[in-house]
Structures are given as C-alpha cells and as structure tokens.
Image (cartoon, rainbow, N blue to C red; front, side):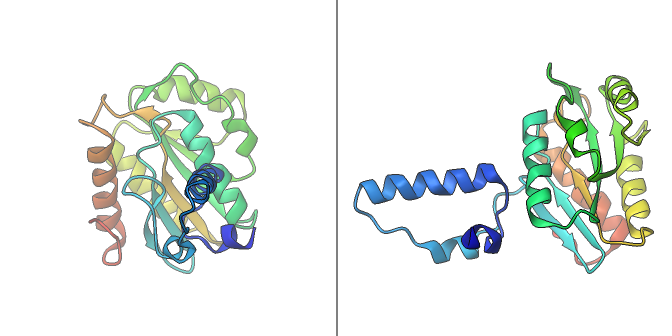
Length: 197
C-alpha cells in the first residue's frame, strides 16, 4: 500500500503488472529493485503527465483506445486525488463496440466531457442518457483548447486528460500522432513547461 502511494506510475493495472513481475523474479531467485520504480514515469501516451502546476494537471493517455483503458485511467485518478479534483475528459475517434459503458460510475469525478470525431453523436447520446455534462466539437483542436481554458478558469485543481476510449483512425494515423497533436495544442495554450518529447 505504501509503495503504491509513492509510485509515479499509478493505476491498479500497473500495480498488478509490478506484482506479477516481482512474483516471477522471486520464483527465479532474482532480486527485484524497488528503487527503480520510484523514477519510472511510464511510457509515452500512457497516462503521461505533460504539464503540472498547482491548479492544473494535463495528462496524455492517447493509448486508451477502448473504454476499459479509460476506466483504468479514471480509477487511478480516484486512487490518487481527493474528490474535489475534477477531470475534463476528451473522448472521441472510432468507437469500439462497448462504447462508454462504465463511464457513468465516474460521474462525480468528471467536470465535463469534450466529444470530437466520428463517435461524437454516439457518445453525446450516452452522455445525455447518463446525465454526464458534455460539449461536442467539430475539430479536435477546439475540444483541447476549450478543455484547457475551462480548467484554467476553475476555482479548484483540475485535470485535463486525453483518454479517448476510441481508435484514432478517423482523424489521425495512429494513437501516437493523436497524442503528439494533443501535446502540441496544449503547449500552444499554456506555453513553456509542457513536455512534448
């Protein structure tokens, strides 16, 4: 428990992977270097923190190409931040069959959904039915810009996250191109301090 709280890499799925690795190494009589976990920030486009200040955290989770991955992201936020820290969540692309099923469980955590791309009508119908606040955007860049501006004007700490629950192929070559586009738009809105490596 203490180790999990101190790790930069959050989420039950990541902690399960760490536990499995530990078990395999111990079964082979190899040591597990816990200290290396304290500096490992994760992989690009996977819950990647690209900006952090006192009142704003921006996360690139473009690799979340299905709702299960997006729910894992939201669970990691629930485990790490107090309930008053709200998420401005960018969703869109080519929807998978499961759509957004399960997202309604995080209604209290979500400040707003910013819907774009091919799935926007499907997702807006789901959001409306489940009383989730949302806006629909014709252009990805507008959704990103609006989410940043609304979060910056919030009175409490906010998280802006691209965790789209969709494939990227309606607008982008792949999730990496989508994630890089997100980072560049965020940088144009916030300025220096955004990790775009």
